[in-house]
Length: 293
Length: 322
Image (cartoon, rainbow over the protein chains, first blue to last red):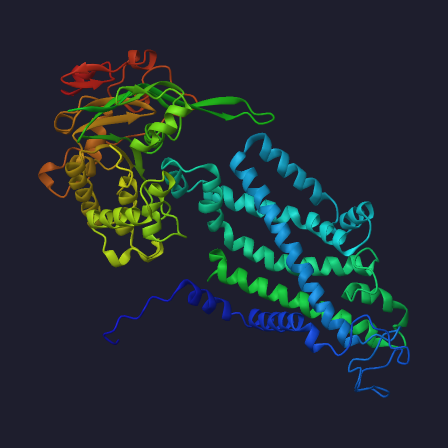
């Protein structure tokens, strides 16, 4: 040991060390970073507009196949739109969907859960039974019903996914808030005269953050998947929006002669959802002390 | 000495069970406790687990309202919720478990400044100065200001907890088993710190403990509780020298001692505490008492003065000789 005192590793360094132990999580994080870069630089990276139709080039295969053209590296779809450009813009759209749905659900769910935990009694029962009712229905069916009521469209589909994923956040926030509320530091702050709002958001919420962060990263994946599913059913983003699920449904009839119009958006969804799930698992391992060896 | 807090016949009952089919019951966690806290003095409340010590602490800290009885602080009756939140600041609490009583997401500095911030006392600079001064007072180093609780040992954490309790200049500190989670070697340090602070700030302590050697060290007055009721209450010296209630005698006999000369004949306490859901009509201790007579099981003894103590026993005069 040297004489110099080693600086205490910061929270961030400790967190990174236990996160990096999980190889899958690091791979997921790498895919996530690539996706974010792609979607930020979509305007620069894409060769064409995602909705421009090249009438001379219907269903061109990717370049490594016979008949491929360099102008369309991953081929074109049935109306002559560049697949690569559509996938790139689709990545941007998917991330926006994931981010807005997950953050809106987190915000609403956390507020509802904390309110239930702090208020107790009738309010608690009311909120939690409402969440139980939402949980009774299969999530995709419920989303379809909501979109059917609101009308198809990307925004309504996102709202539907928020409603469907809300119970998870609410229950998680309530459960962790209840266990924190029983601890002495909350009593100490309360006997110093703290208001309920302060107790909720300044004292209890930061201590419930770990499970909520994990839930958000997994919720990202669920949001992207559900929005794609709604798009596939024709209830989400409408053509010509380059949304991956919508692209799949439009290409369904060509699956025998043009595999790329179907396989590529499918693979894009697969890898994106996989990346977010891996990162979510890694975050849970790193943040949840109960799972630590 | 000025009287800071006066409790008369405090009761705290909890409804339990009920539900859809269950029968409703009432747990009498605290059932008629009176005490007086004076400036610069320590009242120790002792008793085994489940005797209502911690509930009494929560009532005295004004965290929970008593079901019955009056609580006076500085001669003003704590009557309603408004009065309770107004007077809450003059009573602060030190908790048993120093690992649960400090917010893990806040630094020591933030924890100490929080009570001032909530009550908007002083500006940011004044608050930091006050927090740093308090750290000096409880024996924490200045470079520990920005550290998180998980970087401290149990004894240091309890120092932080004491410092936090004192930030609002309370006159009464309720300490709920403040040293029972600590190593014996650290216990003395923390107790001595508490006693030094008491001398310096003229604090009144309501000191909850089950450890009689700790009580012997710090208290001036002792109240022994059994099943939610006080069984003996008096000055420390005479309680330890000449206990009048059979339960106090048994507790004292059960205290381990290194010095063989001070070891008393061990009197085994047999049996369990009676259920607080269904307390016996007579003396709660009768089922475990070797002096019990028919009168004990039939009639509940009320506290009465015996040799300077308040003793709740029908046979207080005779059990000494037995």
